[in-house]
Image 1 (cartoon, rainbow, N blue to C red):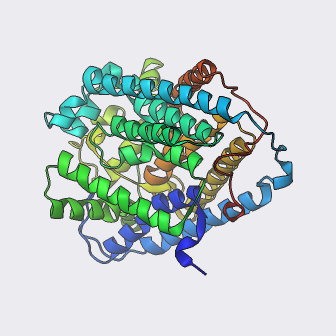
Image 2 (cartoon, rainbow, N blue to C red):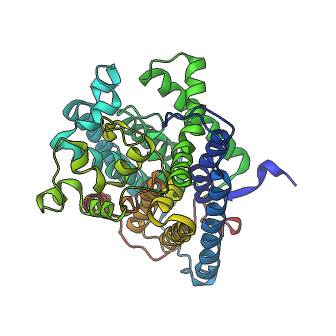
Image 3 (cartoon, one colour):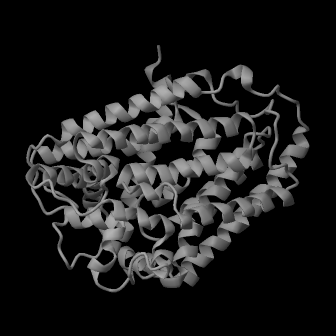
Length: 439
């Protein structure tokens, strides 16, 4: 058997990328590594065992729900032969329209929002993010929803046609422009994350060898951006990316567990759910007062609460420029203690399973709008929650508005490309749908 030829679901590959590095980071912290997001030098405290139990419960729930509810092949519509030339013309119209949209998004982010200053090194990425002001909502919507979901729409439709060289070229150009447009804020991995929805749809399964190549390409890209935005040499950039991917992914969760071991005292968790309505709207409704002082509203945002816990409640810390990755595990410890955090682990497994079921249904029933929502929900919303905690990152009012706006835009792109937004038949040409190995 060719081990490197073993096929795995791209969905599960991405899931492993977001959930396993924190375990490596926690293990390093328990072996006395210097924290990246915390000031501590690590020491053994049992966090690695607790996180492993969290993963066991989460993956078990995911596997159980997927096994019970996954759609059978017989439930899929009967394939219907299509007019391949006409399908290719529609793809070309969609691909060029989407490309223009993403180029427009790029100009908006660079020259209206001011991301060009980050690229030139005039302003730091954290400072830029913290001072977006009134344009922040539109900027985040453009980067996190419009650009990746429009690219995902192109990827979805690409699989419906028998690709020619120029079709493949148009798809690759859409990937490249989406990557560049979403990378201009200075984050090393953002561009990679924003092409993941499209990757999920165009390559639902992949070989282990291809996965290794993709991971290597992502690492090289992150190193290059580290050299650009952090002004580091090659060796330092490699070390920084490796440290960020391991220690930086797990030291916050390690610290949260350590605080529980020492004092078992955290700020109130439940007020952070208020952030589901959005910071500005919550302030307007009087749910909390948003002023300059950190203690006025930090308690209503989980990212801020996690930052204050890991930074030992330093009153001068600026949470908007921090990069704390508390993970769902850390959120569960703060919210529910022990063994209550396992309830959050089981909920995470349920969310992952439902997310994949929605994606599978969209692919099988050829529903492009559901497909791009499910793909972006996993690569952005679910990823953000698993990585940083804060259950309101799954669904909140600003995100809901962003999904609605992007769905309307995607519907318009399908309309001008003369495509149906809901097609029941499955394609008979092009890349096949999910293989048996991904079920």
